[in-house]
Length: 291
Image (cartoon, rainbow, N blue to C red; front, side, top):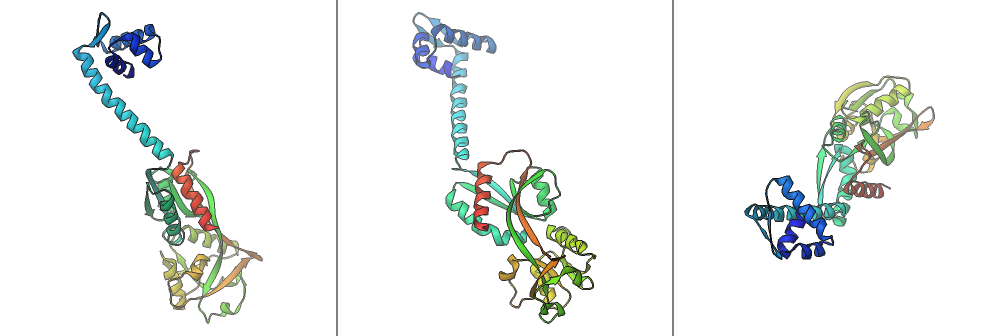
């Protein structure tokens, strides 16, 4: 197409070939081959001048539009590659996202104002499926991750605590063994939350199945139920200082066989060996904010 347009502009094979940095026979061959492929004559070869046929004029009209679109595409891809424009969809658990994402999103938008960010909040199971299927690029999750279609990078490790009523017998301890709680009623997040999975696994590791008396989708609701003396719950450290509750439970560190426990938050992305520049930039910002 570029050869044909240059030939129309120069009206001469020798001049067009020189402009295209080709040998004149090579240009003639390419145009003849193009005409043969299309099944029509595009140019009339007159003495010292080349004139497009009607078919040639139609071809040139389309070629101009196609090459312009190609240039626009190259420019847009370059902008995306250089993070000047584009779109990034981030998935997150509601609880973790509320604490970590606002500052990360603010910092990202300041550095890359041309990238549109979209946020999807859902359960861990749904988010993992969306990442593995490519519906969202990256996602903030809590270990454990059970979907094998996801790669992860650690973002934050934090201590976890027992939340107990202020006058509960466990509140007198500076630290407790989790096995001491085997007879206690537990308030837990619903099964769709990975922190619930981790909490259940910790109790099993401590030698008992927790007696779940109440479930909630919100960790602050769990703490409110603790304050109402309905049971005890396990909470991550980030909820200790930033709880929305006017009154707070007593937070007691706990161990299993003398070992303190941690929760790990990760960023997950599709296991295909490629992470977009926008995703990588957001991950690095999230890591720096979480340090």
